[in-house]
Image 1 (cartoon, rainbow, N blue to C red):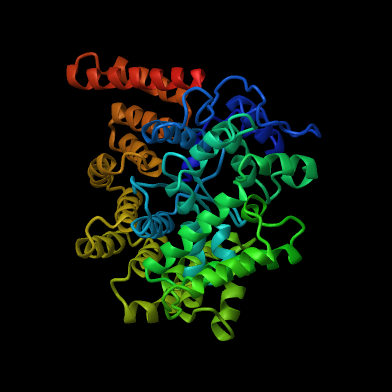
Image 2 (tube, rainbow, N blue to C red; image 1 turned 30 degrees about the horizontal axis):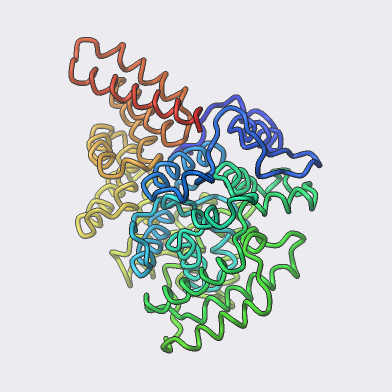
Length: 502
């Protein structure tokens, strides 16, 4: 499937990464500079502005207002950051967050999850129920419980409403703004891989970190809630202290510590406190989720410089020492497929399919082999069979829609995605593929409508308005569709106006 990010406005994508980031931040009005000048949290931004969560007269912002601001923040974040379109990975992270959230004191447990394609170790939570996870978190965590400990910690900040409470406690001091958080997290999400952030001075880094730091008391509280959440969910509470140790070790091998560590400082005392707290919990036997290692393998394959190098790495692991043999075999099959060796990939994958023929990850890999071989009928039948047994499975559904698309079954893909877009309205990848499918199925009005929704979710309102106006002109003789598009146009104009007011 084509990368959905390619249809974002192209004017900034022609620039080198560092210049593109400067322009993007300036356009968002974050008020951050990539020069040597320290960044002040109170800098007055230009253009689109996101507000402080509260002020000295209004008190703490309401949860409803937080939700509204959180959605606006997410659109702005997506407009600047490369997010993952891997449905299987997205599904895994969403499932983990949802499960953990069910054991927290959060009143609203509906969390919007964004997976960031970045090898740095970071995760974050934003007021209004937004959770972000860098793919690099999978590479630093040794097992699922350690991975979950970071998610649980961030959920602790959300459940205790630390952002809003910090405003009440620090009315006369510098307080975190959503704009400042956006700038800091955009920079963190574009660091590494030649994004030009390595050249930042220590002063700049400290200024960015200050946008996200909580008080020591807040961090202790999030640690407590996070460890309690781990234990309540049946996971090993010791994993929190283990993950802190992993992060602390990383400072010895990396010039710049993990982003998460910069904004959540870890000390020996904090590690000791986490271990002491976990010892008071009921003992939980350590477990290791294979699904975590399968997702980790997907990320590692994509992160290798070439598919051939990925093949060599996973072949060595399969024949030697590995964290999980099934994951090593799975990673090798994916790498072989990426290297243009579908026959080898099938030979490697087959033992996994023999053991678990209905496992979603394995079925999707097998279908991808079919697609490379242009056995479209085999791919669609295989995926439909699996989906019938796992109705509503996001990864299988998107895989089947993509298989129909590649097979030229545009009407079948269109029917699936049109229905699914109503159930999963806030997923840009669904709208992107639906727009492409509408186009090849001959529904030009549908193209404009779906692309508008895609651009709305990515915070590119001018593009959304263009597509809606095209759709309105084309539906003058269709009162119902015309009215729907006109109402959506009004909605987007309001979003744009609110963004300017913010």
